[in-house]
Image 1: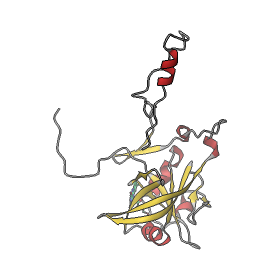
Image 2: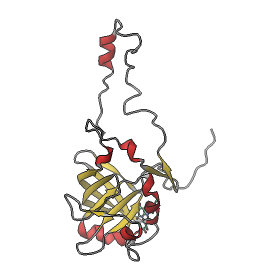
Image 3: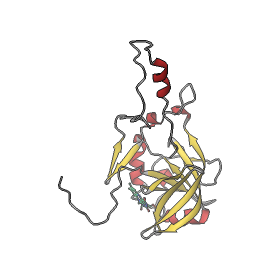
Image 4: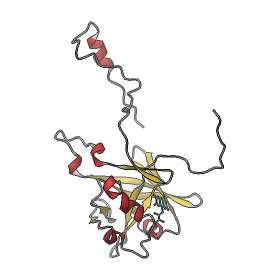
Length: 213
Ligand SMILES: Cc1cc2nc3c(=O)[nH]c(=O)nc-3n(C[C@H](O)[C@H](O)[C@H](O)COP(=O)(O)O)c2cc1C
């Protein structure tokens, strides 16, 4: 298998492209699109976003120590791109994209009401990495659109039509290929054949230990 060897570059794809909202008290809130974002710790729940110093949002996030990560869906793909190519220095992005600032629960920065999931964050550390500074932040709470809850109170994120970003392009998510731990899970005893000799054993062995990430 022949492979070309490239210079170092960002090639970790697909990744999310999120809309990060931020704002100072009494000022028009802003939105910056961020693809350099990720979960970094489970307990406490933490994530990071990397932002260039020259972005209008940079100073706002640094000064307030707060931001909201808003997940992006198919309906929000145009706004996601637009908020990533226009600056809050020149535009009221909420107004231009017909988005609604949503009062947050634990922080002052607003979320985006149209987003299915708003992750309210408080900055814990700022790492100067080079082109970007990484804001490492703790998740204070998560606001989830009730529309995606089923009757049993389970959240079905699949229904939110989230988008992914890969090598400069936006994509819908494709079909489900498996679920966490499926590669080691034992198959359930066939429904058709009813109970087999080893059915109890088979049933118990379907429980995969959910490893914490
Ligand atoms: C898909 C996409 C991903 C982006 N990811 C980042 C990022 O991770 N960090 C960053 O500083 N800018 C990123 N940008 C660029 C900013 O979103 C863009 O410069 C924006 O206009 C800054 O807005 P502001 O000046 O209002 O803060 C991205 C843009 C797009 C379209």
